[in-house]
Amino acid sequence: MIHGGRKVVLGCVGVCGSRSGRLLQTSFLGGAPAADPFGPIGRTVGGKGDLPVTSEEMAKGLLRQALSSLETARKASLDSHWAFAVRTSQDASELSLKALLLTTGHEPPKVHDLAEVLKERRGELSHLGLAREEVEAMARAAADLAEDRDRSLYGDEKRQIPPTDLYGREDAARALRAAEDIHDRCKKTVEKTF
Image 1: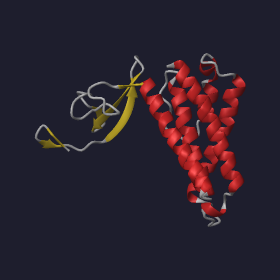
Image 2: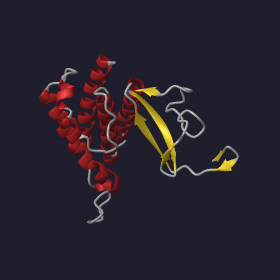
Image 3: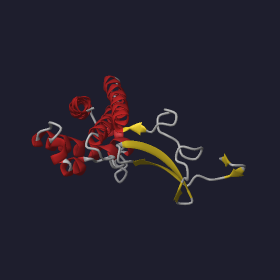
Image 4: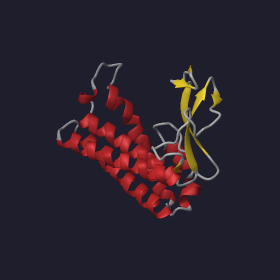
């Protein structure tokens, strides 16, 4: 990238939050934050000009992505691509849960298994109308789906079994049902909260 007449290399890009609940994507040069987060080095997420993306916009965007993943999982099931249906169901549940976690005012962690985070945020989620049992059910489903994530993508590498041989119709139906339940509950909470 050329900046100020000289070539610079971006070290990493990340998302940081602010006390206002707004999320801002910033770039770092050599480990130091960009001097002007709204300038040519740092930029806002989502192409909204100079305004950072709010938690509400981020949550709703994640829910739209989750819905797209659910649609892909349904299509994969109809086409008998069971492992891919499991994989995209996990993706849908992860995105939905990250949208839900944004309603607590915290940036969701960049991990695939959100079960422990849900349990840690049980109190905050109860203030949003989610019963303890609902949170625990979503945490169990998320853990199960996360466990299937790598296997549905890579198969059983030790035994050299491809993912297509590890999953069947029932597996795909179970994963899709769990992801749909998680998405529905997260969507209702996000819409009620924002």
